Image (cartoon, rainbow, N blue to C red; front, side):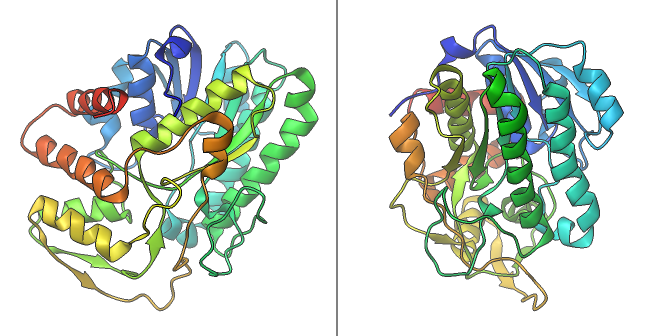
Length: 352
C-alpha cells in the first residue's frame, strides 16, 4: 500500500482549516513535521483542555483565529495569500450539538465551506480537499456498508449539513475549480478516535473523563456500530488523497476513509469496554435516550481508496483503541503532548 510521502509535502504551502480541533491539531503537527509550511484557520478551541494548546500547535504553524461564517473576514484573509494545497476540516462536528443548534451547525458546515471555496476561486492551487463525514449517506439502517455512489441524505441536522456540504462542494468544483484545472474533492471519514480528543459527547473523551474521575461512563447506544478509525489512519488517507489529486487527474473526487475492508464491526459498548480496561476505569453504564436520532448501524466501504490511490487503513479497532489509550495514559502521567503525538506519528510512519 502507498505511504504518505514526506518528500511531497516538504516545502508545500498548506492551508489547514480547523487546526484548533482534535483532528486538525494532529494534521498540523504531522504536516509541519514533514516540512510543510502550514497556515491554520479556525475558531479558538471550545473546551479546556484541548490538544491545540497542550501540544503548542500555534508555535508550529502560522495560526489565525477566524470564523468561517464571516464571509467578509474570510475573503479578506484569503485575498493576499497563496497556497499549494487546502485541507478543509473546520466544522461543527458533534451530532447532539447540531440537534441543539441546527441553524448554527448549518451556518458553520455549509455556509462556512461556501465562504472558503468562494475565497479560493481563481487561485493557482494544486488541489483542495473538503472533509465531510461517513454520515453523509441516506441511512435506511439496512446494515450494508455505504459506497461513494450511494445517495446522500441526513435525518438529523449534522448529517444533513454534511450532505449539503457535499453538494455545495460539487457545485463549486464543476462551476469554478475544475474548469481552471484545480481538482476539488471531498473525503468522507469514519468515526475518528485518538489521543488528545477532549470534546463533549465523544465516546473516547467521555471514557477518559469518566476514568479520570473514577466514575462509570454513560452510554446511550451501546449496541450501535460505527466505522472506528484512528486519527493517524484517517489523516494518512486525506494526505494520500491530496497527493493523488495533485498528480493524477483521474483521482476520484469523493472517497470514503474508514476501517480496512472486511474488518470486524465494533459496537460502542465493545469500544467502551476496551477503553475502560486500558485506563483501569469503572464498567460503563447504560442510560437509553428515546429521543435520539443517531443511527444504530453505520459502516462505510473504503475499498475504492485502496483501488484508486493505494490507501488502506492499517489499524484495526482494538489496535486503534490501544494506541489512543496509551496516549491518554502517558499524558496523564506527565509526558508532553506534542512529544507523544510526534512519537506516535513516527511509529505509524515506520509501520510499528
